[in-house]
Image 1 (spheres, rainbow, N blue to C red):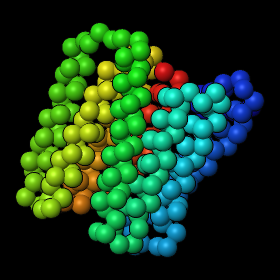
Image 2: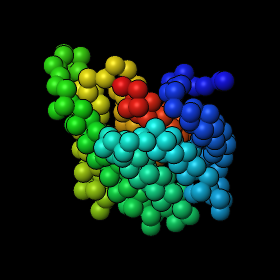
Image 3: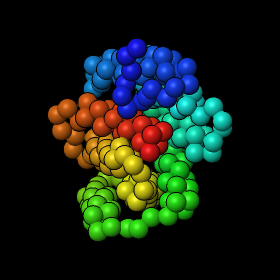
Image 4: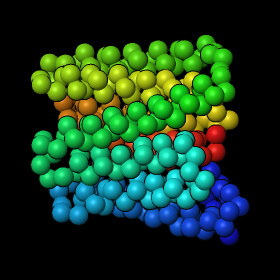
Length: 230
């Protein structure tokens, strides 16, 4: 049977089901991407929920024994789905803070995963990790300073969110994984959120909405793969 190499096989008779949900996730993600950047349409929030929702089902199917890390991964993905829906509702101005809060909680779930792994197995920090984390922190600080004047009453929530995502990225960079996908996923998440900030509070550039979705979807997929296999 065909399978996505990074997803399996896991040998538990659920490989075909997981592969089916991956195809659902990928195809709906491509379909959503094709409609991104255009006019709002009634099915938009629900279509946007399916790609990451399908990844959440994969996480659930891959955690039959109820391991804490598995539940935290599921929580991160479900909270991300909530954030996706909030940010795709018609009155985006009204629901933006709810989307921001949902993703903040999702990042906290990812942080908990990385903290448990790091504390459980220990890790020796190497120079490239310190440099990478410094670059991420500098990127967030420059982004906030650049957009500060346009944030208005959203300045504090955005600052808190940026701090949390920097911590999440730092945890991903420090986790002693056997795969690079966790770090790659976290860095793509930072890039996606940075472009969201530019699109909403700065000066959007051509194709920004498409790039936001591509980097975001890949971020969630790589984090899923890295946590399940790392």
